[in-house]
Image (tube, each protein chain N blue to C red):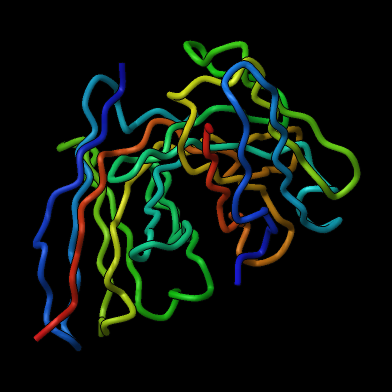
Length: 128
Length: 111
């Protein structure tokens, strides 16, 4: 059974870089059957997809954060990481990682389609 | 403002059935059969309940079902139980550059 676990600092100063890692256990991140996503939830608010990475290193980011975000993968450690630069208080949120399903039919690819499982989440507060 | 519209709250009594909606556009809900639903308890991670509009992952109760008509998807919970009280979020693939959108969530109260 695949499990995901987020790790990283819970407090980041404004203008600095938020860095989180998601470690995958019970399965290989090398599986071409999935993307691997970061999703965040602002306090008391809904969910916002940040972006995904494929095992080969291909990425796609939400345009709302595209200029500040990098997602990378280390298949040897079976983990993937999030870096969000120039953070402000608006980046305070619970950050989740999730295995991400996509659908490939013929020459077309559709996804992300659904997220399962999710990590337990980690709260990151941006404050001086 | 979320891309998909969900009612802020719904409620029902134990044993009853409830249906909550998730309204989008022809670019997301209406255009693709890639709607998913998530259950979230306070302080916990979301859990996948329905994928591809109406499919239930292994281990999810058969009391949960999903459907879609036009630009609106629905989640129905039958035989409501106290443990169903949670927040529910819908999500859909979209042809826009954001590729995936979520609803703002619906808080289900079991009376």
